[in-house]
Length: 78
Image 1 (cartoon, helix red, strand yellow):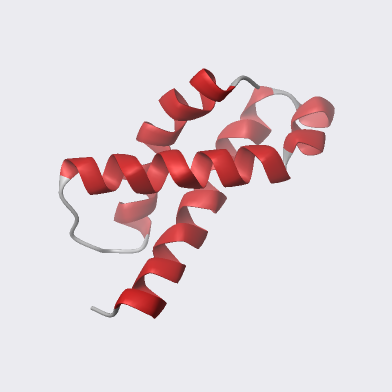
Image 2 (image 1 turned 120 degrees about the horizontal axis):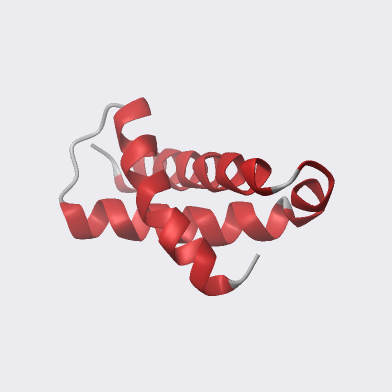
């Protein structure tokens, strides 16, 4: 999956991840969380993407965004 595709998917994944983690974040922060998470998740789960197709890339993006939110909350505080 290209980096551009990960950025586009990441914006949507960030929105979903912030809702799943129940945090309030402004739109740029939500998008940044999603994009970073998509890049991390997309790169880590590249092998899974080749096996299962495009859905795995979205799942990886959401998981990556959830990881970024968890790290952000843990080290930044509430």
